[in-house]
Length: 279
Image (cartoon, rainbow, N blue to C red; front, side, top):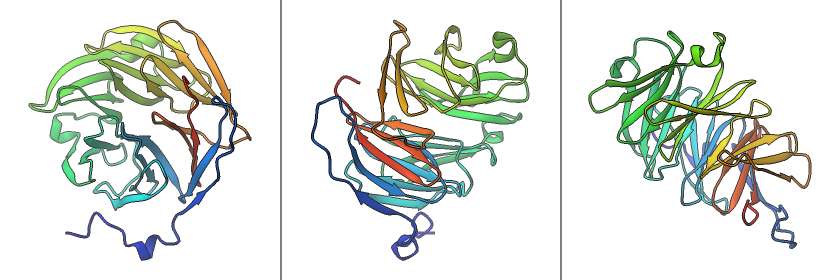
């Protein structure tokens, strides 16, 4: 259906409003609110390497904005359900996974569907709570059935790697907040614990303690996390940390970063700040 991927502007005219806010001049390291978007039932947020911002709501609708707040696209994905994982890091495609449907979908940069598959179609018979794309057409998943982190080759559905997370953590009641692959490293965020780092063969490297249960962002060798009214930057190689405080208390628990912007969100919408130099 040609119109399946689009919501009419008439329907969405009440659905979101972009509010532009004049930038306050100041020092380079000051945060200034640039603009915000109201989207009822905002859920996941992410960015690509061109600074575009992607947002899903809790019905599975996907919205795309450029760095200036202009709406570029919006669609109803084939998932039509809450999205568990949204990742546009590779820019050329956007990955969406729904745990409730046990399905993932990959879109091109124009939000046209490339592929969509169920866990069963790739040979996974357990229940997957988290999934994220890996290099060389692979998929990382966390299988709740056997509490294993797994890496699957999507070309032939071969199981490449498996790691028992309950044995590693000495815990059986695990809540995996997210999986992220960056620069041939896999980051597994565990609720009330921290970030477990693995190489691309699922070999455990180290654990980084993180305050709170908000999903973190990985950028280079840094882990960014929201805690109260601060954004914390942790170098997972040197363990050095920095903090930056938002100019006013922002009730937000979701985070995304582009090269020049900080994006935070709550259930009502997203707020965009400038990203200070060297942060």
